[in-house]
Length: 181
Image 1 (cartoon, rainbow, N blue to C red):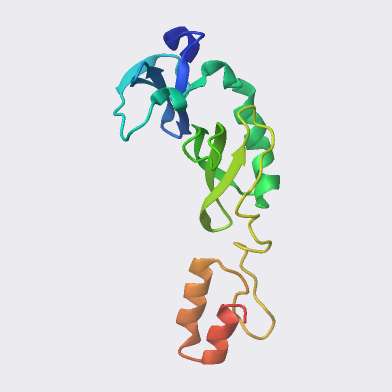
Image 2 (cartoon, rainbow, N blue to C red):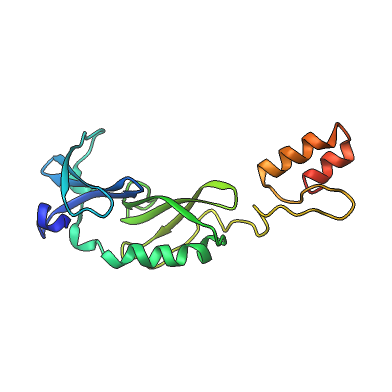
């Protein structure tokens, strides 16, 4: 879709996928143009892109040929295992070099899982090498459990902990049990 609008030799600055669609920032000399595709649509909408900062866009651009359409499905399939959370839900996927420490083009996948937000995964442009640089979600989070005789919860599920603390009525031992201590 984007190649038909931008051309087979286009240089990209960034690709971002959200629930609202896919946005492409495309280098046009030392300016940038943008295209937006609504989910499921092949009709592109022109989007104004404002370039901020110094430096050359040529140093930030990468060829459109680096986009592997199969990479997204590949990463989505691997994300639960790599993140350590079977309920991993992607919120934003970005292909570019702005989040890369060494300047390489990479995917940065932000998501939520097990009651945690802002989890990050990274991968190569073709979707390979998917990793969780911040580590996996600790096992057991997000699944409230009730330890015997305490009535508390042993996990970091915020809603369950708040409910437990509310019911503890100021009893420090019950409050500790709510926090799994």
